Image (cartoon, rainbow, N blue to C red; front, side, top):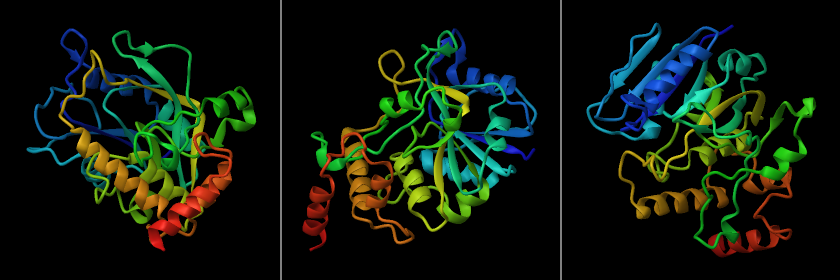
Length: 305
């Protein structure tokens, strides 16, 4: 099989899952316990503090002197990657055995793929529980009382339940993904996405809408897929597991607002489909009202005249 480059952007990921062991250190150990094919691991420390990572074969660690942001870190590592495929992961995840080979066994080079999603009980290094998340959707900015935005997350429990334990849906289309773990051909990432953009989004935000909407709406007949034959588990932040770097509400709001207006307004010049095409493909979509076309057309008319 082809080589997979596992790329991990990390900024001040110092939360300890065991005394003296950070979640990032435990995660890297997990990769080497779980990956079974030809793979390499790249870790980019987005500025100090840096961590000691035990030496492994095919492991490269980048210690950036100053923070540049998640998206530039991903682009930097993708440019250095030697694999045919990229697997980008947040720096606080656990993996299913053989995830690297399973993902490429059922893979098309114009796909963006995410494994089945679980929540990580990081302190005990296991799933939090049996609940899993297969499908995600794009929230409707027109109905969001908190502002004009695509919300982060967006688990679609009804679709997950409806297609549960049905082999024909083991590899299936999903409108969106969580963003903490995704798999893509390196050439597709560079030649079509041209890497990840920080313009308007800021250098940290709205990773799932950018990647998923470029996949679905671009001129390459792409698809966003979930592969339920393997999984990963993501540690949620908050409470005893705080984010390790400051991020203002104003900065978040600005990035979210720009992203929603950009894609809702069909501003991406490379598209061959407008956003309404994707909504119709998955209709009915949670948070999008039954008559969503009417308020959406009204919004477009008011915006563009």
